[in-house]
Length: 401
Image 1: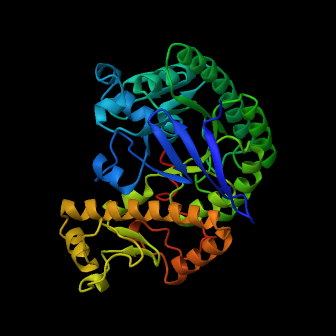
Image 2: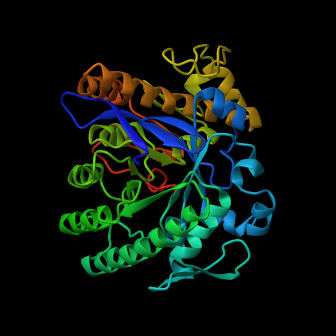
């Protein structure tokens, strides 16, 4: 039984809309998933996420495993009840976080040995244990444990990571099937690696699809490569995945990256960047990224974006938002985060509308022309560029998995 139903397809691109059927309700695609790493999307509560229209958020196995820990989550019978979120949750296996802990981890066929960034304690995360942990969470979608590599990885390292990822994926699928037989209802997504070597990506896609999992993710992108190389690898890999199943690109959160993914038939994406940018005073708008710390907004009575109802009918001016950010008022971070999440939902909803009407290409081109016309300035968290062909900074490419 497939969990994805395609609803409309663009006439000129691979872009599509659809519906994901998950244990906690349906999710319309394309879908951006706000990142709630430790069981919370920072600076917004779950009622606000619901009102913004989100029905699928992301949490992280690595962080929740360390804190609050499995005993607590078992006591609460999972993450939904613990966090009072009534909709769907996707949990990443923790592979990217372990990748980012390079000096403190060791990868073997058995699993990932790592040292906690919280208290220095040592742990072993196997693919089977990752499935068990995410089953305890009650994840509606769980990810297999994988080995992520950076943009500068050599071919030998990329090959080793691919082989380990495939070994782990087969073992994860076997454990997931066992947990399904015991009543677990969540779905398992496998991850295509292969770094930036097209033949390795082709091999990884073929071998991953052979696992016949409910969905597939493309991992190892937005890890420091140029935008052009991102687009090339995405365009090479996405068509190798079956259309009847959902496709997910991990860790992308800026409009140009998301629209390029949608263009290639990707259904799901996530990133910490929109919420992190909001907390530091950067707004995503149809006119580009705005840095509220810029003095030019001090007396600006306009709303953040005339095309988007940022705050559910209530007006907050750019001048007031700047005042809150400069005064380090908590409300400033909350409102800016809410606006950015509203923007991301608007972006995917408008993309879906354009796909249904057969005009996605023109929508994408028109939007990006406006978005980059005046520059996407975002202060210290910005890419520092106004051209989508330029590479993102490490802040943008954090992968947020």
